[in-house]
Length: 368
Image (cartoon, rainbow, N blue to C red; front, side, top):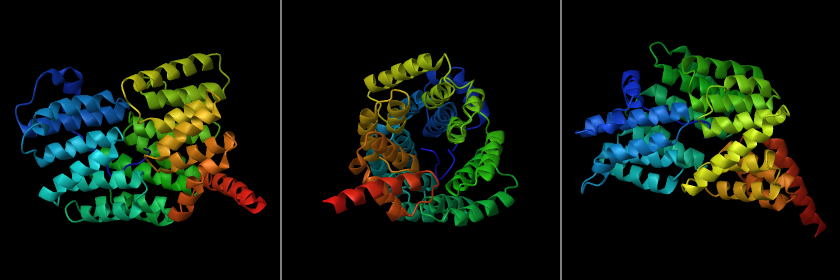
């Protein structure tokens, strides 16, 4: 997922460093400590792009999830872990349980908004965003709403809201600042304003320079701008992340580098390792890999269709459209243009793809 309706709730960096030194071997004795430690693991995992940390967080809160009466904090954390793994339906059920006990739990509403947005249910996401304003204040609520507008063909309105937040950002944490700047970058991408988008990506990375999520989003931006060499520099120190490594492999291939084959082979091995562990939440990345590096459009289309059944973000639509076009199966991509029309998403790359495939579908219909 390229954006989220809220930054993670990170623990202090001191705690994060302690965790990385091996504090995970010490079991927490209270829910408060477990909550802090699990949140820290999730923050580290997001920053590094390493899904193992979600497992560490899950182990920390396991005793409370096994209890007869599960506390709200544990339910929300477990739901967040499931959301990270793209297990959206069970995550939603846990959040609903948490909100039944604590209707003003802002993190539960934000995580629910994330899931609804990723799955393309913008009505439900708008409701969840609205609930954040009851407890967290205007800034979080407005940013959540602005993020939604980007997906509904109202990117300019979203930008205006985000710029208002940015102008009043005194005392804002680096994570919150990076979140707003990242949302601005993506919103400007929707409008094809590449200069402004890049400016905000760079500002976001100044605030959180090692955030894997932002690094990958900016790498995709650079790949689309035909600047693969810059991707190699950007992600040079982030090879532990599977999502970052895929972008490195794509950049090596674009440069026709002697290392391109080796990078593709390593990426294939990584995806196979994920498959053997039962991890299927990189469906979008696997489809891109099959299409652009394995040059197997049929496999890419199969993977893109499987991914589309789970999530409906703009990149999911784009991958489905590109795979269907490459496989010469425009009918397989029919949900893509339909969703684009329904959502009114603006995007200078996705929209032309959708029009091309819809034209082919219409021509087939007329021919019959």
